[in-house]
Image 1 (cartoon, rainbow, N blue to C red):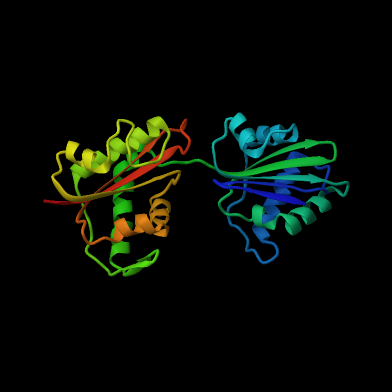
Image 2 (image 1 turned 90 degrees about the vertical axis):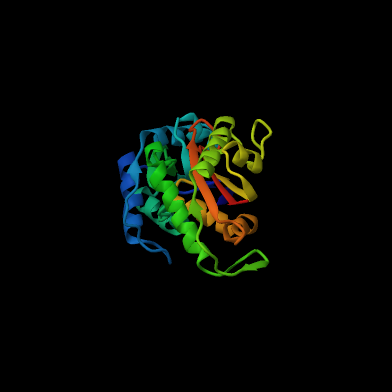
Length: 279
């Protein structure tokens, strides 16, 4: 058996040994294991959904594509994906045994929600994936409010950001001009498929705050890409010493949060939070 981890959410696994069963049977077998749990891993309440684009991705892998090329080639944008290749003459019992013993961690991963299968002779290829599902632009206000809510909850607790300790501090206030500055940079990153503080026009966070008519005494910015929920992006920032330090700094009193989506870009969704204090 050979395992290969691809940073960025794609996991490819290849093995030898499994059944000559139909595609529906393979999905049923995977969901039976998922509903019961295996090894030391608990059951998952949500069954895998069959997905035709992932069937095509599995076929592409059978003919030599890598996992990321296969999902992309099938038109499926995956936030996270895994592939399994099984070869055996033992029928459904062999598939069940192999999935439960060798691939329990993949089959019971609650983040993987859809599945595709391709069979050829005694070989079966499976692709399990989590679809890329960014928040709707119409939900921007609600999502931004949730980000701010989570960040202010974090600021109310003392914490360590890397080697530096921060005491609990006061909550941030949402400011429309900073929200506009955050949105402009998020849209720029989405349009040009990059993550960084320097805009495509050469601007920096302080420049963008000034453009938004915010007269600042101090300013900072957090950016991120690929996260699809408020919880996920805040956790990403808290886990990064530099981003966490911005988030916890008592020097900032005002903030603006925004995101922009571009499915054709590298990360798909881009987040910006501007931190500032007025003169």
